Length: 482
Image (tube, rainbow, N blue to C red; front, side):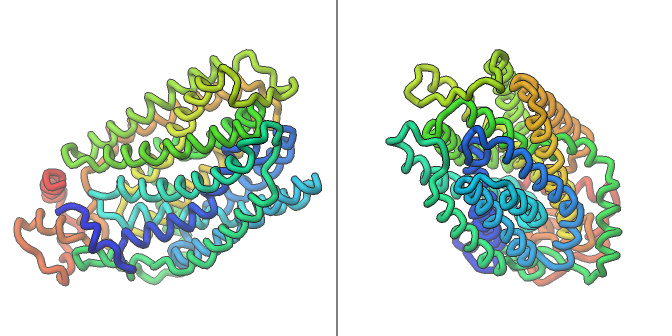
């Protein structure tokens, strides 16, 4: 049985809850992405010093809170984390707005620090929902929803400054009206986030719920997080988790140094437009019913890896003679070289962004248990801050553009290698019947039992933890069905 669009438009459906949570992220982090694509966080190229300081504060705070995001998700739930996580974004954008008007560092640094303390909560919550609310056969689609909704919001947000500056080649900053609009949209996400349902209240299309979450103390939640982080398989995913948003640093800085405001806005606008069908295609690869899960992992990773590594090899060649200490070029879209550079920007930006899709899908392949997925999602956001903070540190130290592009190429290459090694050594066909908290969907139970199953009947104890040979047989049956 495939995905039923009609029955999934219910308030308690995993699909609708994923869309709601993703929309909250789109109205916050999606706007952040749009600002980053404008160059130097949306400011002028000479504002880069302020951006480096503010982002270092943001990433430092995010690393600390990311370690405890899973604990808070398990104790407080996704609604609390989504709403509180959204609170930091209006302060962040307001800081850049203030800097553009007054040129003072205090507010943008404070806003970035507040965002660092909160952003991992909403980002972790969305990753958590995408990983554990989806059935295994639809995880690629749910990860795609997370990104497509985010990029749709970014696309709309990036169209605002493009429309304002399209007829003004001398524009060098984001207009005040844009900042005001962005802050208002981010405030809406705070309210919407409070309506996200926990997994025990979400009901699949077949009538089953997601899981039965046990009550736990903060001490038990912290111990559970430590056990999850001790899983050696995560080592193979660390480079990829660090790489999920580093492109926003480098491409934003280079875009700001090389192009004027309207050229930067056009770059971001077209890259975001292209990102939507690209994300849909990757989702199709990761959910392709013709292949087993290991084959889907190879296909998705190789697809992203080819474009990602090729684009940054080209990027190293492109910037090898650029002097970042010289006067910024601020070139316009009328220049003869703009077309080729636009294509390279689109490929590099989109292939870099797909690393987050792969990371979320791989983590979702490791577990269906919401308790464990919460910790995985928090860890991925923690390491996102480590990677982004590292890149901002490299940028702040004044390393030549070619050195910065080379560091990006090295980290992305190690990410793809790690994902491929994980696929070969660690990828399981299914995690159903192996985790106590998870309520197995009907399609998986039917294929295991070879008969129709009552939706109200819970799996027996030996269904939850089968013998290894029996589990392998069920994996094969589920693979054949999806």
